[in-house]
Structure formats: C-alpha cells, structure tokens
Length: 250
Image (cartoon, rainbow, N blue to C red; front, side, top):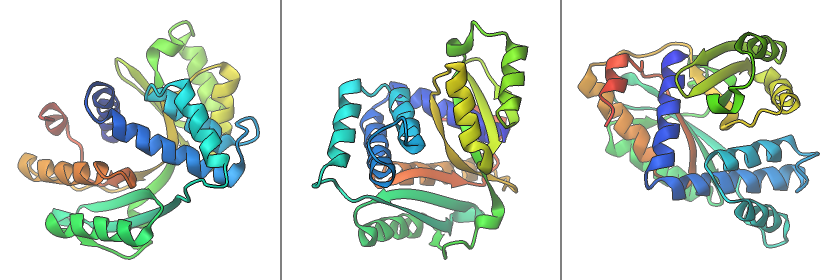
C-alpha cells in the first residue's frame, strides 16, 4: 500500500498547486449531490454527506459553495448523478478500475471505452477484475492538523478506530481500514476533532505489475486521461509504483 499512498499524497499536493482545482471541485460537487439525494441534506444524520463536505474542505472549496451545492441537490431540479464503476485493462496487462458519477451512462461508457481503445487497452466486464483489488477505507490527514497530539497516543486511538495500517511522510498520515470499519474510523476521527484532507473507500491492489520506467509512464499518462474527465471520480490500477517512477514524475 505504501507506493499507492505516496502517489496519492503527491497528487494531493499537485491538486492544490495546478489548474486541476476546477476539476477537483466538479468531482466533489457530484459527491455532495449523490450523498444528499441518497441520505438527505442534514450532515448530522448523513455520514456520506459529512465525508463529502470534509473532502470539499480538503480541496479548499469555499463554505458558500458547499452550502449552495447542498441546497441545489435538495431541490426538485437537482441533477440526477449516479455512481457507475468500469473495469478494464490498459497496456502491458495493467488492471484499471474507474469510478464515475454521471447523469448520462451512455455518454460515460463511450468516453471510458474510447480512452481505453486509444491507449492500447480494453474495457472489460463489471466484476471481472475485482479479485485483483481489496476494498479499503483510506483517510488522509495533514500532519499539521495533529501536531499537538502525542504520536503514540494518536496511533493507539487510530488502532482503536479500526486502523489496519498507518503510513506517514513529511506532510501526511494515511490510515487504512477494512471497508467494513470505514464508518467506525470516521466516527473516531470526529470524536478526536481531526479534520481529514480526504476520506473514502478505495481499491488497493493485492497484486501489482512491475514495468520499465517508460512503460510505467504510459500507464500513468492513461490514468491522467481518465482523471481529466469530469465524469470520472477515481482511478485505480495495479501498476507497481516504484521509487524511481515517483522520482521521475513530471
């Protein structure tokens, strides 16, 4: 899991620095829309909405934008987004899972299939690649937000909240749970008063593909193509993210 958490944290830094901010906002707004339609507009009784609001704050979305999004999703003219997951293979046999939020499934299928085809991959059947990945709860915490807490005490609290693995770098702490313990960890972090940078259920590869540097860069370019699409919420793959690859990230 270490390579994937490191890569995700690099993307968090990139997202805060480059022109992808607008796309991050689009993704979070759709997450809010889906959460409100499924569980109502009150975050106190809607854990999915609380998580969506936390993720919105994590990408520095203004509070007014968040409140407008909740109000819009609660209205009779709210857009009807639904979550659809796609699976397929990229070049060199690398497995991909693509999570989308769409108001037009036919359009999104066409986009995903086209990106696979143009980059030497192929869209597969739903469920065909699930065996390659584990579903995990993943919480990204900025170290500055917990600098007043004793590290050992924090670790014990996180383990009590269901943490299976805890990874740390200079800026972030990444906490992994079994997907069944996602809600328990979310409640534990709320109890501790810790605001997360990002939280969600993610697909973590159980088996990875090791490629040459040039081949791996092609896989990451394909992942970026998916991530650039407004309909796409998350992209997962089983490429081995080596230190060399991360050091050579553009």
